[in-house]
Amino acid sequence: MDIFPVSPLPANITRQFKFNASVARYDSGARQAFSAWQKPLYEWQIPWNNMNETKQNTLASFAKDMFGPVTPFLMKDPYDYVVNSVVAVSTSQTQGGTLQIFDTKSFSIRVDTTTIGSMTSNLSGFVTLGSEYDYDQDTGVLTVNTIASTDFWTAQSLQYFRKVAFKDDYSDVSVIWNIFGSRMTIEEIV
Image (cartoon, rainbow, N blue to C red; front, side):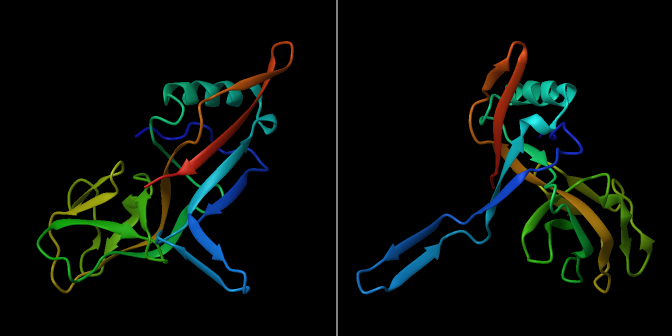
C-alpha cells in the first residue's frame, strides 16, 4: 500500500472517534446502546488552508492517484503513532510461524518497517529483519523463522500506520483566481 505523502501533517487537524453505535431511547427515559465494533475507528479532517502550495499539490495529486475513496493507504495518526515496550513474540511461538503485533490496548497495528528493526531477543540480543523474521507492512503479518521456546522478543518502541482511505471523492473550490481550497476527510478502515 502507498504511504500518505504529506509529512508532517498540518496543524489543526480534527480527529473524531467513530463507534458505529446503535442507540435506542424509550418514552420511559430508558436507553439501550451497543456497538458491534471491538475498537473505535478514526476519521481525520485535513485543513487545506494550513498547508503551503507544494503540500496542497502533493496531497491533491495523491488523492487523484488513490481514485478518491477507492484505494486504501497507510497513514501515521498525528496524535498517536508510537507504541512503547512491545512484546512482539512470546514463548508460545516456537519454530517459526506468522503472527501480528498488537498495541497496549490489544489492537492489531501495522508497524513502520523503518522502526521495527529495533527488536531484541531475550536470549540472543538483536534480531535482524530479513534473517530471523520478516514483516509485511501491507498486511501487518510478522513471520518468525525460528525462536526458542524460552525466548521472547521485545521492542523499546515502534511507530505504526493506520490503514485508511479518503472518505469522499476529491474536490476543490476556487477561493479566488488560481487559489483553491478543499475539504479532505480520511477514515480508518480495517
